[in-house]
Length: 289
Image (cartoon, rainbow, N blue to C red; front, side, top):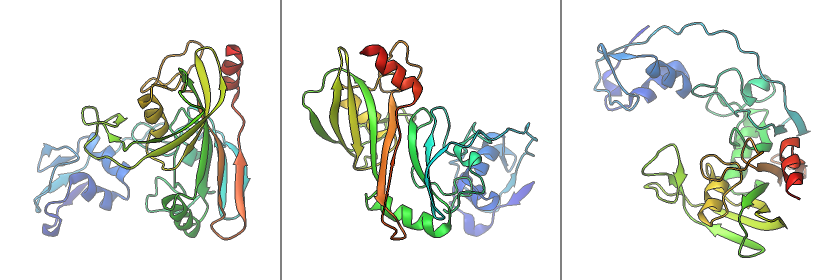
């Protein structure tokens, strides 16, 4: 497949130009990664177009069909919304290296809304290895209204996090802007050239010999916020391979989205959902007591 770059597209990034023509950012990134050529030369996704070039797109090879994962437990639902209990290990939406095996794939036909067809219904996310509650829209209007709640900080999210160390107080507030780490763009940190406001609240649920179980509440919802903020105050999340500390017997980060509450975006009272610790985290916690 060949595309001619019109003169009015001069200055556009290659990935954004392709996303408009292929229907999604994910499709554009796959094309670039597979070897898209600009006038016969492979270019990075950030390459700036000049207008008039010819882009040759590689033919996508038919991939072996991937069965969608089992549908997660539905914690709450109506005709507008779904609150699901995501298991650890499940990616929320398709992206590089994840196609056909995501939460979105498991819920195809039940969720909708938003500008990205790869992410229907999604207004907030959980990391792959974080378990717990997530709300998704079922219609375009529900997605719009849910997004407004998120922007207005009316989506109340509470987590249980096991950290190594002893908090200096029974409760606290962490206010520290975070963003992509200036030295490693795969990480988030306080050392960033693009800081975004981030506020995290915590209180101690229980104290153990080397660990503390915290209940954490997000005021903002930045990527990796809890993990980065807790590490910044010397309370790294147990089992977190990036920002935390190893914990023998724990195969993933001890972070669980245990509570979700928000005013119903269509005025039908308030939505409240709760999720118990999954078996792996509950067993590890019991082993410490």
